[in-house]
Image 1 (tube, one colour):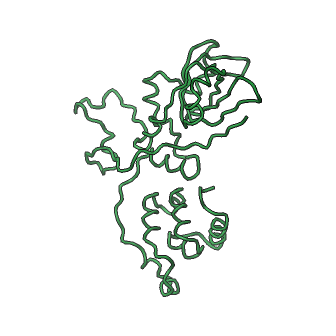
Image 2 (cartoon, rainbow, N blue to C red):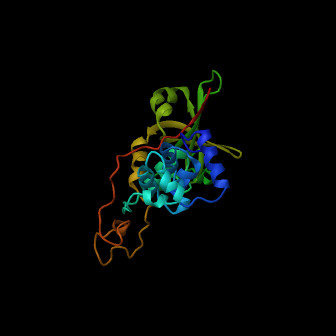
Amino acid sequence: MTAGLSKDDGEAILAARAAGSFRSVEDVWHRSGVSRAALEKLANADAFHALGLSRRQALWQVRGLREKPLPLFAAAGLLEAAREPAVKLNPMTAGREVVEDYSAVQLSLRGHPLAFLRPELEQRRIARCGDLVRMKDGRRVTVAGLVLIRQKPGKGNVTFITLEDETGIANAILWQRVFDAHRRVVMSASMIAVSGVLQREGDVIHIVSERIEDQSALLRSVGERDFPHRFGPGDGATHAGYDPRQKERAGGEHHAPFRSEPAETIRVRSRNFH
């Protein structure tokens, strides 16, 4: 469900769509009767992608709408006349698209946030959650991920945390002394790194945690990133220092990476149980 979109607005849009596919933002607005604020929520959720519009293009068109359709235009079917002039907008980075997806619907079909951070995580020797199944009992390991679940059963002295990266999930055990030492990070950070000892019991795998690190600053950088480019041996061979990523989103021209928006972290609605 799109964050902030009321049930009534959702039902009005579905009822209008049942009568025929939408052709444009103006068409949705006119036929459904919902407010511009509701359309902005849909645009932020990338709902107009099906109409061939990027998130920014859709927001531009929504914000160019008047408070309500002019009766003359509506009656004559000339809603296109009320549209703002076409403007070439800078595209978002792939990472920014994912940040906006999480803001609107708490997931993204474009990619997982940690996929953008993997090269840096690899440099720090942080393992993928999906690789734990191939590791031996007793190995020391560090994994990082979005915090999905925090659970402290009854009055016990242990807390369980479930992390998620682009390859799967990892479960961590925090004994009371470790939890107390890292309480603020454990309870508030959307992304953490857990270091400890891998423990296997049959098919059940846990990391018995020794150290927790807040990775919020790294997570905030997702919006500035595109999917990592794996350079081949020939990259830069004829032009030293050349980075092909600098050509992205610029029609083949050499431009600096696009960073017009402030850093914004992904907020994960973790589930906490006691």
